[in-house]
Image (cartoon, rainbow, N blue to C red; front, side, top):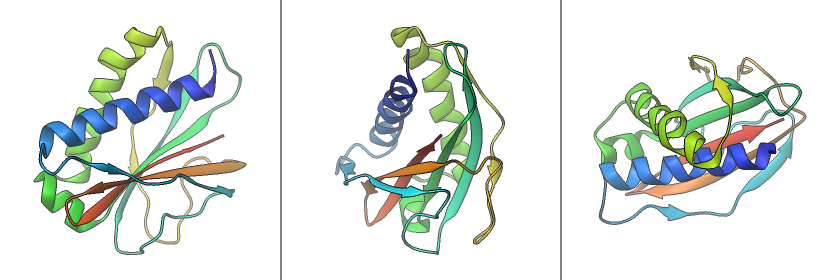
Length: 142
């Protein structure tokens, strides 16, 4: 078991969540962007939720985050906390069981622009996902 397994579970569940909320046009995947420490995804006008994740098979904690441009939330007709709750239910209910992952995710907190998340990782990857005219970003860092 590795952190990569956790990222795959989060990513798969997010694509499923966004596709169910907005089947056409389908979400489009962008190229991941990696950077040191914590940096916000491109575009300052967004809602960012972050939490920590722990896996029984790994030492330490990881940061998991979702960032939404307002137009992406408008496209899926939901608030960021609504998408987070439904997405996390998919992750913990289906993806963790499918991949035999034993992990816990803390309650999310909204991160104000320019502020630090509950855990500042050594490295962070943002995966952009196009949703309608906007983007959603999955962030993961250890």
